[in-house]
Image (cartoon, rainbow, N blue to C red):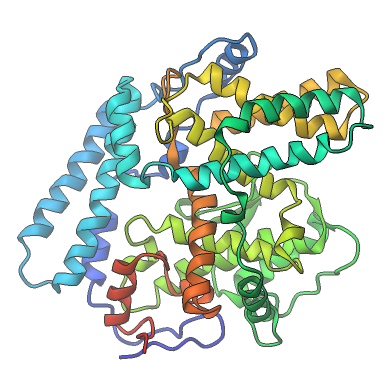
Length: 467
């Protein structure tokens, strides 16, 4: 059977996926399972202690000692028992069986990673981290350093700027000079960007279908009063989903499937391109749409996700933030792009890339704060105290995110490198396979860059077979 989309959505199928019962038992085996990144998140009192330590130039432990180790063991036993039963089954399509084996191995590894963090066992935390996400890509890491260093070079090429700005840029240039790579590796080819943009913005393309029935003005700023009704319409009518629009606990946007919720800041105020790309394009039209279509397709597991799908999942979603802009260079000037770079840099610096050794959290803080000081000094050059406060807040937010789970003596939580690495991978795939491949990823939670995923979904009729 060949599966064809009607607009954004696959039609509801009359045939039950061959793995439906297996999928239901797989889901049931996840006792009280939540998203790993949320399991690792620090409690408020510990977070305050960590930040105070960093501000004093000291190391701080971010281990997840708040987790109940007995509960983790129960979750682990449930998944390992389910895996043992899976391996004994003889009546399952071997390709489907292998897909579930890879996925449950990832989920088991996530619990081992949580247990390692709770116990302060950094050797195994690093081991399972790399098993799931892979080691940081050295070329991409050095390309990100080069991008930031080039921003410092641009500042230093104009010596008539305020002394605080020049001093901050000189510090960054000196820090990054020995480690710079090639920032050109990070940008999509102009022709490929143009083709994907045209495919998404054409009259019957992705954004036309996603935004159908909404009236989002292109002039002025989009606030909650304007944006929330549009988000609700897209979720309910265009994606035929019951997910609620709720307040996020921070300034970030996200989709939390365990709560069936699209989370957006309590208050937002942004231009059309930024709003459309981030809310509808990234979160709803990528992450939620993948889940809706996964539930309608031939492989039930694609609702929850094939193993290690996040590289393609986040890479595609980031590309959709970019194409509302006329060029990638225009997007590349945004704080959002800088934040994606900063995540990758902080992770690579802390974890160790190439011959570089892992760095203690106090060193990572000093390194990243120098970068944040440079960018903030450009905005508030005449107020040194405000510059320090705002840069400190940026570094605080970044490192409590990417160093969580570690004991502060070295290493990082590798998940957030998928944004930049996925961005690079998805643009390369679009360059090779054509612009349509970005939207093909809407058919379920899988990685458009993963040959194993593609082969399975082609065999099951979800994806077209290359000629």
